[in-house]
Length: 219
Image (tube, rainbow, N blue to C red; front, side):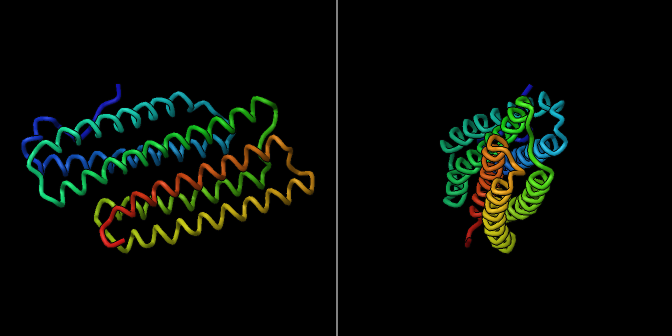
């Protein structure tokens, strides 16, 4: 059953502890969202969707944490908070929304691949290689973003911004490569549409993780 790992309503009367619990829960939620995204890319690469049930269970956990953290934070706002903690909690609500959206994009990537396979088509070897490379770059961004968030590291946040820009450039190049494959007749229209959708979703995953990094002061 979905459950929280850190937040405890018994500590609402001790705001500094409760705020740290929120942060720990968000870091855990981010890790879950990233692992589920990586699982999605693994299924897409292998064309083996046997892990879909486990993926769905993780998605339910992500959705649960989104609502449960928001509920905890809303109650915590009723306590005596420092200005810094109040600002942090306000941003935390946006952060959990970003992480929930990562889950949504992961689900769309998986559904695109499954739908394509069900129609007897699939991505070409070159398209799969490009998807894998973009996913690796996104994994780099995740690491930078979560280190920035957890340790309030401005340098990691700046690095995350640079990686986010690189992802945007890489996605644009993938779209150009796709157009070349279409002109050469090595990609079908249905596979092409799905490929562009997957590229867009991966790029948006990176954008959401960069928004997490941007919550660090000074960035």
